[in-house]
Picture 1 (cartoon, rainbow, N blue to C red):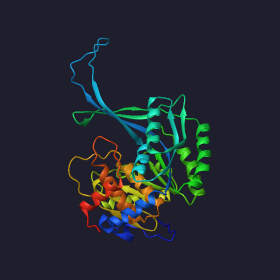
Picture 2: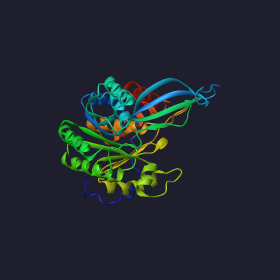
Picture 3: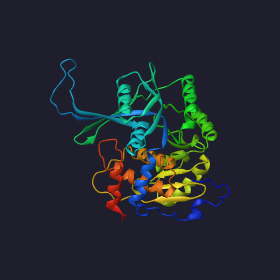
Picture 4: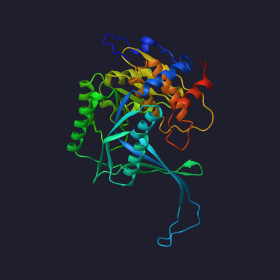
Length: 362
């Protein structure tokens, strides 16, 4: 996506309804060729890594604790997967990206050890993932399911803080790593994140200093602090970052009007995920969209944004066009939302099967 400083006409006026780059414009051969290139893409991920812990919960056990007299709940089928920035990592691995570097920290606890095990299982390079002995709980989303529905979460790591001295050492590592990367994904998930606004400013210096690296940010709170990276937002985040009301059903014109404002503010491409309506990308040079797919059955949108970020990162590293990246990210997200009660990923065979079932193919 090439920046064009001469483009002064508002995007919404310039393009009207931006061109649709639906999956029927890509053949299965195109998809396979892109995936072949993914294997050589080198991606780093920095930010808030977490573990998602899923358990089945039964509350009507009829048992009470002898010690406290309180009701005893029964848990079964515990299963852990990577969450937050970790979910971006496992989506990258599912897409076939073989060179993945993580930059961040975990706590000296059982969840930190589980996270390292999950990263090792994927072949992820963790040399810059540090274990902090005190003051940092490994971030964890505990997701109990009762009668097939998610119950109250129990979160760990919500009050974490690290020193500026430690973050400075991470930046030194990053300076050594960036010349070896094609893409860096920047993730901010928690209310007390690794990447505060002041630290994002330090990352902005790297974005300017390493023009050959593609930077992609997904930040729940600090998104407006990023400069020069592709920023992924959903429509609620777009409204929050601009301090405007969020309509019940934001239409394309709303996304174009307000997306243009945020895009100019961050100085880089803006990627807007619109749920069932699809995905929109606004850059200084062009604006394109892809419509969502019609999907049947129960859907679980948890983690779908991470799938979009990972797919976009892989496509950017592989030199894909905006249309190709939008198409593939849309297909990958449609795969993951059909995987309920798990932090889903999308692989080549699943994406090809969905493409085959929804669109003409070669």
